[in-house]
Amino acid sequence: MALNFQQRTSTFVRRALLGALVVVSIVLLTVYAREGDDGFLHQVQGTVSGVVAPIEMAGGAVAQVGDDAATAVEDATADASTLSELREYNAQLIEQYAQGEEYRQEAERLRGLLDLKDAYKIDGVGARVIGRSTQAWSQTITIDKGAAAGVDSGQTVMGPTGVVGQVVGTTDNTATVRLLSDPQSGAAAIVQSSRAEGIVRGSLDGLLYLEDVAADAEVAVGDVVLTSGLGGSYTKGLLIGTVVKVSDASGGVTRQIVVSANDEASLLEEVLVVFSAKGSSIASSADEDANASDTGAGDGTGAGEGGDEAGQGGAEGGDETQVPDAATDSGAAAPDAGAESGTDGLADDSGTYGGVAA
Image (tube, rainbow, N blue to C red; front, top):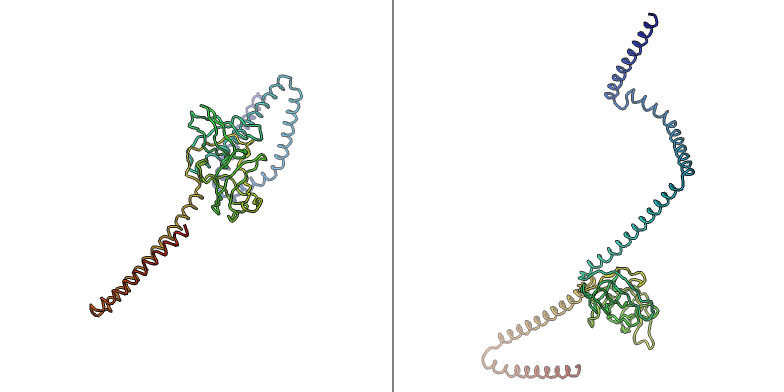
């Protein structure tokens, strides 16, 4: 009996204690929720957290050390099949990374071609380089687009930064492109700043030379060189490169200008075959400015001629006002006729000068 009474008493005490703890917890939660951040319970919470934080950090470090040790033991005791699986997984990760990097670089190159196409308003087709010539005297590439895609001989070919060559031969599905650096190439070109014209030719050393430029033309290092479109060999207004060197040729009659190539042939992977283009906006604006200057000069000349005619009309009106009678009119007619005869003589002289000038 005494034993049963003690068990009942112990059970009652535990239940009462549990109920009291539940009530206290509810009261504390209510007070915590209603008090502000400066309340007593919040202050107690902050103090306890500050004391326990170093212990938690130490415990986390110990747990990390334990995990590392367990991993090391597991790796050391791994069997041959597990190691083989890990090696295969590692190889797959390396392959995926390499493939992703290749896609990223290709996207950058294609973005460059698209930007170039938008800048020059080009109608054309993109192509991949599938072959290269290894001969120094014949620098050509082969692309995977041909007559079936609209590619034809004579069309301009551009890389990510400008003109690189011209189509010289096609099949149904491929085409051969002669690069600007080929010794047999030649592109009519113009210096953008001074509008000086010349011919860009390749060479065995791989450099581009702008030749046949007048000695008095203003050309400086850094000037932009564009295709001029003369002769119809290359589409007009496309970027060829920039001037990197200017030197006098023998006799000083013409100058030899070295132009930097846009792209290395060995680095070309994608190109753009140009069917038609409106040219660069800079070149177009320069042509418009030149036309505007010519138009302004013509308007000024017309205005001057109109002013002269107005002045002559006013003078004639004044002469007629001062004529008192018909006798004076008849007398003035003779000088007027003489003046007209003199004017005719000047016209004859002008025609003579024009013939000499011609």
